[in-house]
Image 1 (cartoon, rainbow, N blue to C red):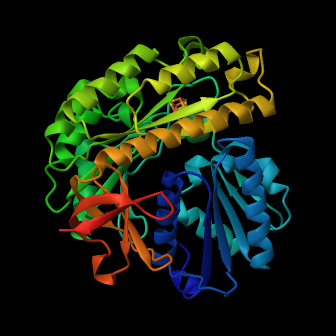
Image 2 (cartoon, rainbow, N blue to C red):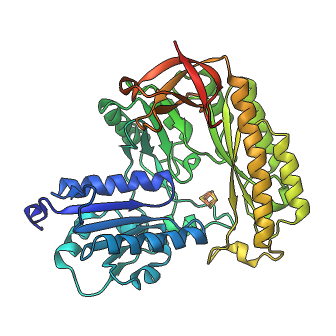
Image 3 (spheres, rainbow, N blue to C red):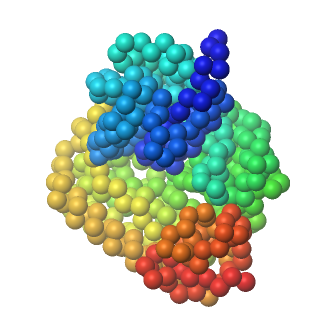
Length: 439
Ligand code: SF4
């Protein structure tokens, strides 16, 4: 066992790329290193250790990872450089070939701070790779961590067994797994004791929660709802086939689960959904949307869509666009497809050119903006509760209503992390938020 005293005061710098889950996971690695005596680097200081948590969702993400690693190495000369995350799992040798990288950790080793500490103490010559085979990735511990000074993130699940044809996540993160409802709820209770007012429920395929414990995501939802102190829960993103009617009905009645849904559609063409190996047809998606809207007319519904996947002909894209136009949703999150190694989509012909992908993406971004503006307009004059965030920009601060309308008001420190009743007014100067009257 290494004496923690040798790390006392050593400085560590973190950099995270990719999704919110990655940010939450970096904070857990950080917390464990700080417990071992490290302190986080302050502005302008050089770090002794750098930890970079990477993403590999697209080719662009891989490129950004490499840039970030190189920037960290030049900003902190001589530091011990550790790279973790999806890119580290999928392309460890690429990362190890970057001069200055000391340790590349596969998914199973990501939180193994004892191991990281040991490698730092040894500092062997040349980069070291600790690989993880997909079948060996089985560790999981739920945690709830604070993102900024307001929302907390509760990680309830990791991995995915779906193998959609375009996606590398099941290879990068391993099998779907979770802890029990009781262990997961215990983390929410700890967060409540730390002052958590809003918790975002996060994971890779959270609707799959329960696979390893014989429980269901709905079981978890019902138990979380009983935790004293937490005032709001948001479900980060859930597959449409796993968003069962019971969850929608429960949310409509719950005082804590907010009317905000984020549901990945990916394509509005049944032919493309089949090529993508998604587990539903667009009719099921439309049913879920109308069920939500019939019970919660003011619910915000965000939808993920991918344009330009292999096999998406012009006709299929037009089909998607028409389907989305008629769907009562509030915003689209539009992604352009990029080919990923070792995925089944590489076998599909009929590739879409870069220029065409850009055009399709622009069209759906425009549609998304129309939907967002329309949704915000429909909310003007209604009353909601806002949780205010801590960032001050140009003298104003922002927050979100329970139904995910971004709002703005003049900065007042005492509002940070407070829930306030408001009436929604007109659009802010940049059109991205609504002004409020605080009630
Ligand atoms: S459900 Fe599909 S897109 Fe989502 S992580 Fe699993 S394989 Fe990837």
